[in-house]
Every structure is written in structure tokens, then in C-alpha cells.
Image (cartoon, rainbow, N blue to C red; front, side, top):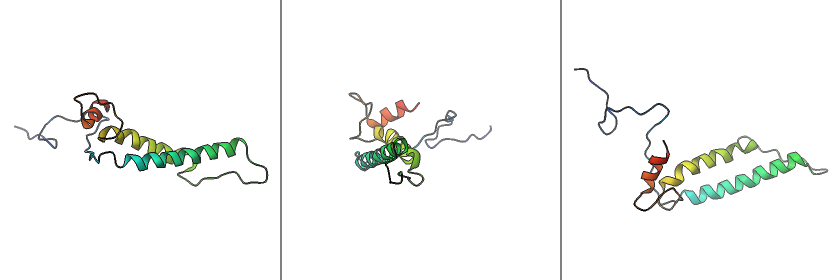
Length: 111
């Protein structure tokens, strides 16, 4: 009999292509508040950058943000992190309904 590799729980099922299993610690939503504040700051920087590009002020240099702030790259990264992390946190907004834990909701919505 050939030996088969098993997953972390002893299962021989393979993860479907393009999907991976990760463990996310439930920190009662504590990381969400600073991430949302950072998102707001990055939104403001992106808006200022866009405004200066569209209508540069007379006698002033347009706002030139360094990478990765320029072009809303950091904002996109924070938004991806928030959308992945929020459903796994107890106090975070998520697709939970009665009888559904945040982790269960995160698992079911990530397929």
C-alpha cells in the first residue's frame, strides 16, 4: 500500500487549486479600528493626490507621494487586509447570522 500525505488534521483530502487554509486568530476586532483609521488617512492622501493631478495650484508643487503611497497602492493593500480580516473577528462586521460564528462565516464566504 502506498503512503499518502495527510493534511494538518490527518485528512488525505487535497486543498482545491487556488484555495489555501489559514489560521486567523480572533482578537475581538482589536486590529480593525487602527486599520480603518489607516484606511481613512490613505483615502485622504489619495484624494489630495488626485486633486493635485487634476487641478495643480498656481505657484505650488503638486503632491507627489512616495511609493507605495502613490497611486493608492497602500490603500488597496489595507482594504484587502480589512476585507479578509473583518469577517474573522468577533466585533468586526461580517456576514454572520444567528447561530453562525465569525470564523464559520469567513470560511463559507472564502470559496
